[in-house]
Amino acid sequence: MRPMLSVLAFLMMLYVSSTASASSAATGPAAITAPTSAFATDAQDPPIKVNVDIDKGGRWYMSPVWMAIGGIALVVIILLIVMASRGGGTTVVRG
Image 1: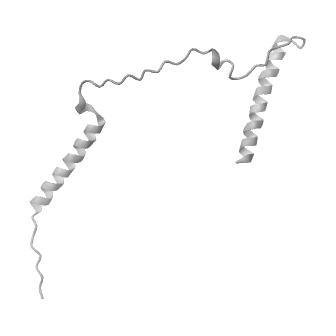
Image 2 (image 1 turned 60 degrees about the vertical axis):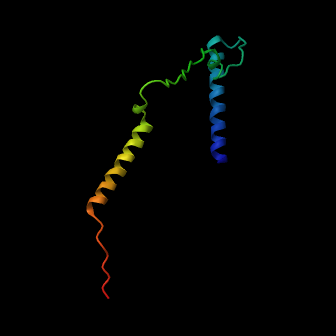
Image 3 (image 1 turned 180 degrees about the vertical axis):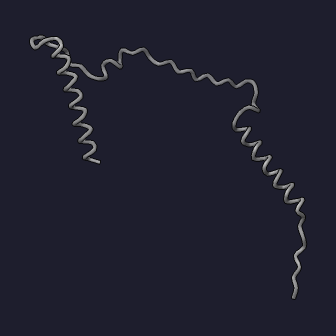
């Protein structure tokens, strides 16, 4: 686990140093630039809108839960019919 963490830390350090060197090379060696981060651009993105409205009205029978319950009930009813139609013969003990 430690080698994996050290490799990830090393790769992150390389990434941050490469972005810092690329930004300073683009503006020239004499210019002073603010430290940049890979996460600085994420703060400027607009927030993501998540809609969590749940429509409770309408067709309850189209719910997957009720479909599964109905399917299981149908299988149980079919099994009961099959078991009843086979009949229960008596057990004969010969001695």
